[in-house]
Amino acid sequence: RGGWEEKLYNVITTLKTVVEDLSGVQTCLREEREKNEVLDEEKSKSAVIIQCQVRKYLAKKRKKQLQIEKEILESEENYVHSLNHLFSSLLNPLRLSPYSSSTSTRSPSPPSSAAATPHMLLTPQQITTIFGLPYLQNMLTSHITFSGLLNRCFQAKLCFGNLFLDSCEFLREYVPYVTNFDAAISTLTTAIRDESFRKYMNRVFKGEYLQSYLILPIQRIPRYVMFLEQLIK
Image (cartoon, rainbow, N blue to C red; front, side, top):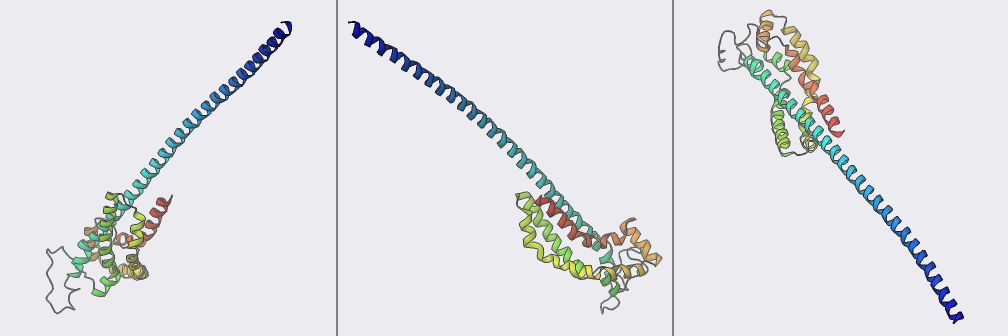
């Protein structure tokens, strides 16, 4: 019996050692699992934070993009309005004036009032040179269409860049207008020396200068470049 009990005791001791070892392994595994769970939770929180930051960044970027697109649209509408004012308030009345129509076989249309046209009328050649015709007329027509397309894109939240790529052909009209600009200002400087013509323009533009309207197309292309560079950012 003594030998059997000793063997049994040894087996029990060995089993206890194994159980203790297993318990230690289980503890290590549990701690590792808990550590991994903490890491996973931290990773999950980090992922959520990153996603929130990305969404905020994209929302801020989209808001800025919409703001720039709105500025482009408003700028285009103001540009068209200014050119329309130039044509309706000054250019068209000058075209209908007796002096400008004197080369025509038709009887000139009388002005609507005595103050409708200046006493010193411009010749057809002066009108053509000062206003960069027919290029300015073509540009106005194109920009009226372009303004409508911009408004449609803005309402539909479509990309402005594609519209500029599709519509940039009409910008070629600016080349001859820019080439003619020095001659336009020189001719205007000569014509404006007449006091009656100068007073007439003051009535039409209410203290503004005709040059400030004629230079608008010169400033237009650089303004487009500025807007598009802002969109790219």
